[in-house]
Length: 210
Image (tube, rainbow, N blue to C red; front, top):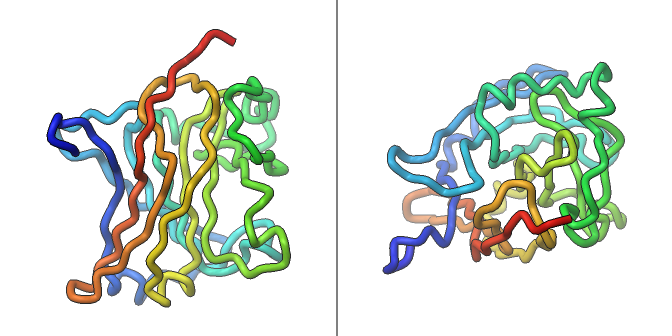
């Protein structure tokens, strides 16, 4: 938050110890819910989830390694948990968004994920060009509208205690007006053994006429 009390970044903090002793059930991911601080309004954001995937997920040849999905949702928890995306609602789950809603360089995944939505990825990401997956940035859609942002980070990469800031493309227009990040960053504090994951350079986007 700057001197005008405008929120300029948004994120979460987690400890190095939180990367240890995690559950390891195959075929299962673990979701931890986080709310915005009381009294804070930061449209379009509603709540966050930190998903631990002990064996990764599809496509296994790319993302089949232990990693975390950090979802920043624009919809309520109830709305999130009511998303089928299980093959029974493909017309809604994978409804093509208007071109103005799609960030440059992003392409859709093969299908939706229950209680999440339809994931879109940047085709320039290194993991699609022969490099191991370390971190990537995903946009999520449902019913033709963007409903979440998702930095995804491999545990092995976190354990190297990286420090980075990456620029992410923004769409021309959005269904839910608000401040959207043009960067995301990860910083490690060795004194406190803390990781700081931040969505930064929040930029106002509007629902322009399509």
